[in-house]
Amino acid sequence: MAVQTNEEVMARIEEMMPGIVETIKNQAQKVLDSGAMNLADHEGQVFKPANLILAAVLAEYAPNFMPPHPTPADKKEVKNISRFL
Image 1: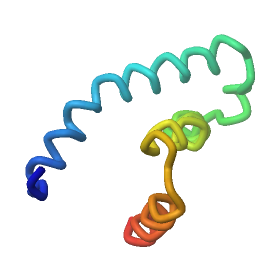
Image 2: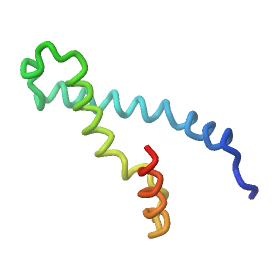
Image 3: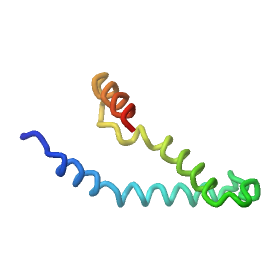
């Protein structure tokens, strides 16, 4: 298999996005329905509740995006990539 271009990698990411967005929305609704967050605690802070929920959901689901059976090299590469974010 040939080396993928930047455009091909971005296309794969775009293909994955609808599922990711749906998962985020479902989990956010689950948090809101559960009462895990008291929205009154964030009165006047328009984006803070959404930011907190997104941070929690993304942290929870980050491991799901690792390749199956990640090697130590895969984990090292993810750590390296994260330094550029």
